[in-house]
Every structure is written in C-alpha cells, then in structure tokens.
Length: 99
Ligand SMILES: [Zn+2]
Image (cartoon, rainbow, N blue to C red; front, side):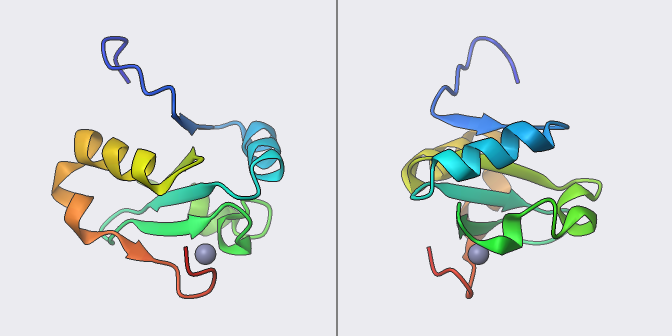
C-alpha cells in the first residue's frame, strides 16, 4: 500500500492475527471485507464468526485472501474501488450475518 494514498479508515492486519482479533473485539459494529482469490469479495459484520481467523484459518489465510476492517461499509467499498476496481461491483453480502 503506497504512502500517497493513506487509507486510515481501513485497516488490514496481514500476518497479525492478534491485532485482527483485537480489532474485531473492539469494533463489534464494524465490518470486515473478505477478499478472496477467484471469488467475489464478501462483506461481513465484524462479529461474524466466518471472519474469525481462529475458526477458519485455512479459508482466511489462503493465498489471495485478505481481510479488510473498517467501521463503515462505505469505507470498505471505497477501498475496494481503489485497490481492486474490477471486483468493486461484485461485492456479496454474507448470508449469515447480513451486513
Ligand atoms: Zn458474515
């Protein structure tokens, strides 16, 4: 992520499972965007257990998988439009947590 595009409203805890777990715990009303290889990005509530790395280490840690955290869906959609524009129109909502 380049310094000329600060995305202070979206945080990613790549390789930092403890930091990620802390963010989800401290932002229970936030959202997590799960970017997946060869699949549409999936939007979750931060409290959804589908984005719990301890429970789903394989899926969430797979190559091409990223989890972006923000307090608003707008911030995540803006991030996606900048970083992965081809996927921005394809975002799906998790049927379990219904964000
Ligand atoms: Zn979910």
